[in-house]
Length: 422
Image (cartoon, rainbow, N blue to C red):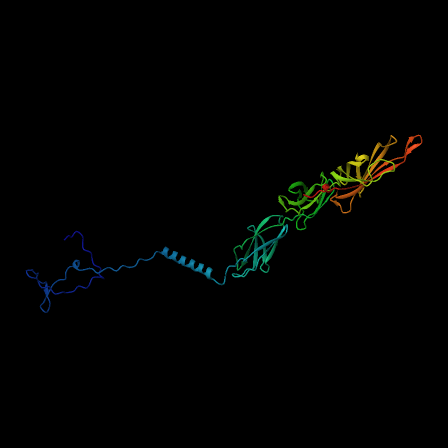
């Protein structure tokens, strides 16, 4: 046994009171020290064994005391939790709800009307806030559930949402309604055409402000860009009988309306054009004169070459009339319209002969369309006359040729001259 380290001192609370124990009987061959003293009964009393040889009772440990900071932090967390619980569960101060739906409609080019149902649940609404493109644009009392946004630009797109204010709080934003303001098209487009030009008239839409400009289209081709104060335009330099498909677009800066409905038509066609088959028949020949047989029809191709200005055409015609022996006499005449038909006179010296003397004469041609046979200026069926006239002519020795006429009827069909809109 080593005695390098001192024995521990027992806790006075854990050591039992010293007791007197009887001296143990010696074992065989064991020497026993004599007792230090004897009790009154004559029994030996031995001293108690040293304290180091007694068993030690376990020491009771006191629980550690928590630190002051830990206690303060725990109290703060408990207090915050209580506050949060009160905010979440406090039935006396609920937050408001946003309206369930939102709708937006543009009724003019500069306004949008936003509407929604009254918000339900949560705090009672006090007012509503309308957001346009994420920013507040309007604020109205809770008694109203619609609002009109004004002063917008035509053809612009906006996103609207509504928030509810109530109970001292503001709800989140409602669903978003997206709307594009109107870009109204011009109205009342009309076109009046003659042979070589077309004049357009229109009006600005009452649903929008005055445009910055208009663009005129013929089909998909841009014809002209005009200022926003102009409401008519004449498209000149057209060919007679040419088709058109006009529309007009309004512009506000870089924004455009949809085109107006197409106005389809064609400039006026000349009455007759190109080669037309004409039936010529002699209806009268002077007595004793030569010429075609009366009543016999002849068919010839007459070539019409119209030259049209704005409101009228002149037709140069390469014509033919029959003569004796199945032959024909060609001539060229310019025909001018008078509102009901066309007429013209061909004059030629020595047009006929009388007793071998050349006689000056004229051929007058008159053409008139048949009723209901005009389509866009072009003639369908038509009729006319050709009259060859000679004056009184003296041939000497008291002889003369009287004034005479050779009369012919004309008829034809000029459907190939009708222009159809394209």
